[in-house]
Length: 509
Image 1 (cartoon, rainbow, N blue to C red):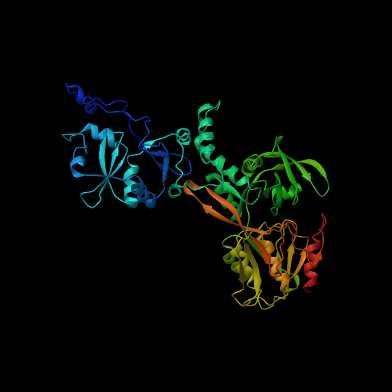
Image 2: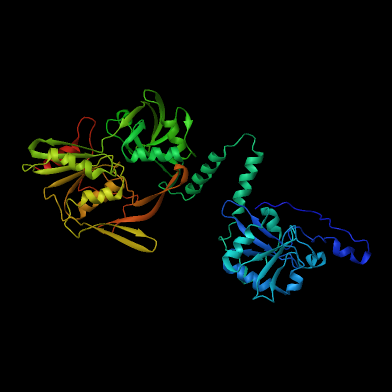
């Protein structure tokens, strides 16, 4: 609470010299001496008491510290003296000699069950103070603002009862100092919202985890769209890996796929704009654009160790979560593009169209499926696994959580799962579970190798953070991080033939 400092208080003068001292306020050596002060910072406000005698600061963090403060500094006072101190500006018969003696001190009333009072040096008024948390709340209203620099210049009391919580040696006031320096001195106007969101993005990027990131409100909307299969731009899932914008998977029939982009391709530039050292959100803004516009991309392909350029015409793409059709020989084919939150509902609709009493086998196509919600992968894989079968495990720092099938298996038909190096995350949970329990054969290429899981925390104003919380292990207790899942039949397609699909059909004859 902001207060006005009185550098001098003039009171009624008496004409006889020996009372002159009683009529004039004696100023403390330091304006903060005996005061309650508050430091405003970006972490949390902190309140302190500055001892009137020693000038040391005592941290007030809770009701317990308030009780200890009264025990340490409370000094007895009789009613006859207490009545000579002012409780308001209308108080009469005030003894200013006593005010000078007790300013900034805590007084314990010895004649009435130990009631506590505080003589505020800012206004020379007496305030009755409760014990514990309520008393601390009262003092907070009397607090004087203090700068971080000034507070740091005041020595902390060497008293274990008032220790300041340690932040692993981190001075959180540094953030505030950097913020204020930029706001006051940067050569261009700064938008506080952009500065704040940018600092949070930097916080998550410092972990060097490509799957942990902060989203401003616009970025959160785009992230939700990607999870639900709505993509605008060139039609590819990308991620930031080792500082490079890497293609996870081009979407089926998208401009990116038609232009020849492949998983693991690195997008170095967009229209001559170097994307290195950018955040993922920043890079995406240069790759995206209105439908019908062109973007020139500079691509590096690690497998071939070559750099080349391609031109892509942007489109608005609404990707179907599941598509299905009947193939020859009574085979049911499902193309699952993403493990969206409503995958189960969409799969049931597709299943009703392609599976009947004559169905001899099932093909699940997860090629270029970048993953999605873990729950959706679990609900789908349970259709094949018997009740009680281990699907996968989530390994946390101090626990491991196992996920078992609870449905008892709906499908007992021969099954083949198609994967490639764009199949990641939830796709790999599904594929590994069926493979390791012998419920499907895997055909295609080794998968992407994303062996961690993330959670999304939503914050005020529409912002959010996606952050890694576990490593997942297959039913066989294996990590697939940066390794992927090796197919039973490793087959590469040609430009003119889907050899992987043909192999799947032959296995189900």
